[in-house]
Length: 439
Image (cartoon, rainbow, N blue to C red):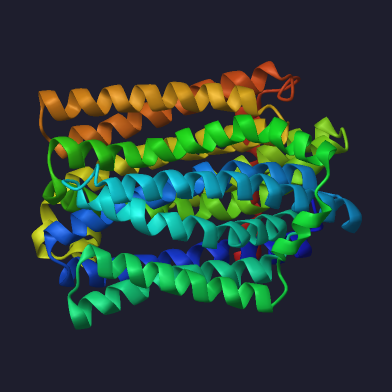
């Protein structure tokens, strides 16, 4: 691990890079829920679910592979890695844009406005966001957390502008998508002017590095795409089988799950490159110790927060969604159970990626996606109640936690010791020291 003070500073910046955008996102959502018509809100949620899914297909695997390769690399190596990443990303981005443009102009999804607008607008948006994703991945690999904080806060402003547009103008899904595209384009110009990335680095791509990245991407891409399918499957299936109004109701407690993920995302931001660097150095003992410490920190943050959230759940839902969505409190409480299992699932997943075992992580996530989709369909068709759709998420994260632990144990990295016992000892020692310092 890094020295305590330096580690603390890095973790504060990483936490801020997750907390501030999430707070802006929740406040924006609160305004949007109160001003947008429920039908338009449901369509917008479907549109954004598709955007997030395709962003992961296009750039998510590339970002993870870039961090794996760039962690601990020299400046010369980083230039070749980044150039090769641009080359691979450009091929995928242009291919997706052509396919989506054809679907948009053919009118295949005319009766599903959320998907129809997505096909047209994302054909442009997907090209704009590629340099932003590479800049973000480079910042993670180099632990440039100040830039990462600025970038993520700036990206979250997009949702705020859409909410303000809805407040003053009302607007349709097309209007919201246009605001999203225009602001993202402006953000790209700012990042290029700050010289945080340069698409011309594509000239430094090498065949060897492109092959190395592709070898990682083919699994990490599938893993991340499937992971995001886990998150968006509920929205898509509810939209198809129950309609946009049900999507709007489900969106309120689902949005609150983003608050659960803030500490875990901040820990992942620092944990992944550090675990990857330790694996690249062959220091398996340090890898194991870091895994134990990060898992301990996750539960130290999660357990007290989840207990409080369960108790005050009705008030949280009322504040976020307003009185017309107050009946979604039971769904939110179901997501609290989901959040309790999330740290084990997430930490085992990033550890498998850091060990450069993306094939194992993909198998884990594929099984999770299968469980989630089957459970969603059964919940909707048999009960037609959203709370059982939320329970499907609990089943999938439980599957991920169990499989992730099993697969990580198979690598041998957790050998020689009771890991949960060490997690308990570390957590107890941490709390005890905190009490002593407080006194």
